[in-house]
Image 1 (cartoon, rainbow, N blue to C red):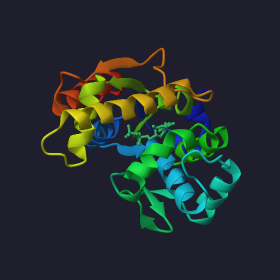
Image 2 (image 1 turned 180 degrees about the horizontal axis):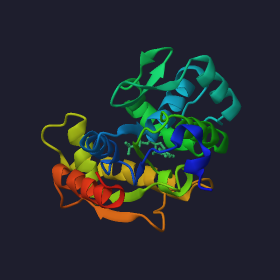
Image 3 (image 1 turned 90 degrees about the vertical axis):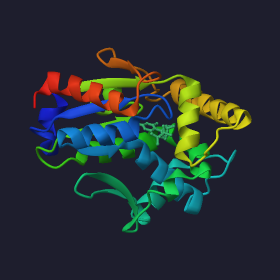
Image 4 (image 1 turned 30 degrees about the vertical axis):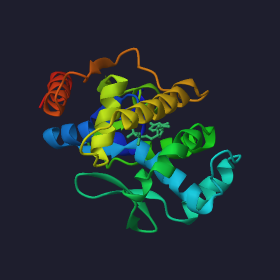
Length: 240
Ligand code: CDP
């Protein structure tokens, strides 16, 4: 029996998994694909960012300090870290308040790979991701290990990449940079490469393409083309 059939909340729902390196556009693409198909969007990285944010605020997470997974998860529970459904997707909440901005600061971004390498943190996040979708609800889930570990039974798995330069450029623009300066681009490219290296080389659930995933390189695609391609693949697999 597949895990989809075993989990009560999952029965009947379709799952599309979008994995890939940092800033490949997974989250915004997953959100647009979900909208086009009428599915809910679930951003697993947001939950890892949420645990990291709680750690920075209350769990002693600072650069170079040893990490205490039990303390982190205790604080996450105590501070009410959770994903809530808002009608279109799942957002990260802390003590009942949306935390979407706070989880995307450079401080959280710099520390999230170390926090998400902790096996206890991964198990905690995975439990929540697997339990989330309502009965019969179809979801587009994005992350690093969705097709390989979290939902290996996904109906469609996409591995989304783009060249390091393209990803760095997009991330800078996303942060509001109008004219992208060469030095900033170099710095951002190096920061993304460091996070990819950390995510790909960790012992538990490293970033890698699932054997049955479709590779999609978005370097020369517009956002709309990228979304349309995944929607096309999804319709081919699951109909609709
Ligand atoms: O949006 P961006 O590519 O910057 O990253 P994200 O999806 O918000 O994920 C932030 C970090 O969480 C990643 O760099 C990984 O370290 C971790 N992560 C993970 O380990 N497994 C996932 N399924 C999703 C994110």
